[in-house]
Length: 309
Image 1 (cartoon, helix red, strand yellow):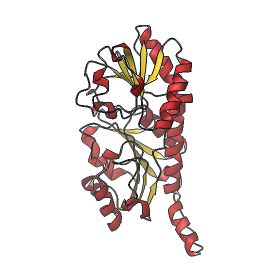
Image 2: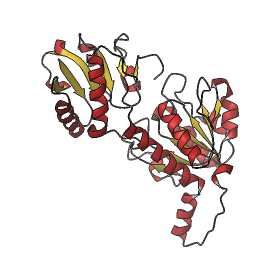
Image 3: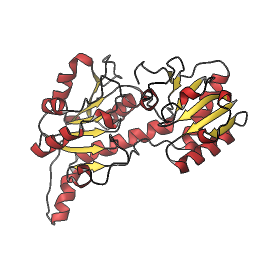
Image 4: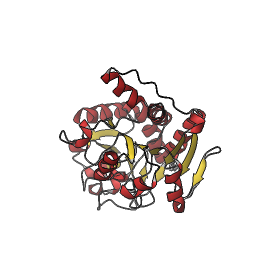
């Protein structure tokens, strides 16, 4: 049985191929470009695969996403809907996302951008901030990563609410369902987007949403670039409706050199590193999921395109 590996970064492709090959010696693990017998491919481990690649494997049993999202698989209109997709979710990835969210919520909560600006101006500018229980933080998305991020923030003392289609949220987190989005937007000072990318959530961070937030709210997007309407954010930053934005994901990656976000004083850019998966931590999870599939069992993170990704 052959496992095909496909990633856009050549160096990471070699790293993943070599590492998974060592973890799964019972399989032949090859870069997709090196496969000459596509009928022998039973699994594909991918991130942003080329259109048509996965449908070219007639005996594909499952696709494994190198990440918690599967929108990059669902983007291929020829992807066989009957073939399941397994998300890669593990303790290291969850920990990294929780660290990222806590770091940047605290940065915004304690007005670090204003203090850094004061330093550049040589100004002794003391800012009194409320304590965490008096700061309302909203987490958009209550899947695996969203729930853990919300609980991390709650553990720091923040007044946390979660928004999801069902409204389900962990104990101690105020849950808002799909019909209560306006109330959720009006409630919070800092927003963290950890939503799956679906037709319903694409462009959800837009002018209409920003207008319903308290003036001077801040946003953190660590989900997908397509959740954000970039021109709407720039307009909201210009008026002060949105005070600060921390962005880890973008519609085009890498972010083009001429993009306005690079030089904007109220935007912090991180290069899609919030929960970056490497072969050492992610490989163990993927290898375990493939062995579960080999045994005829169903991994916990198995889903299908169109089922909410």
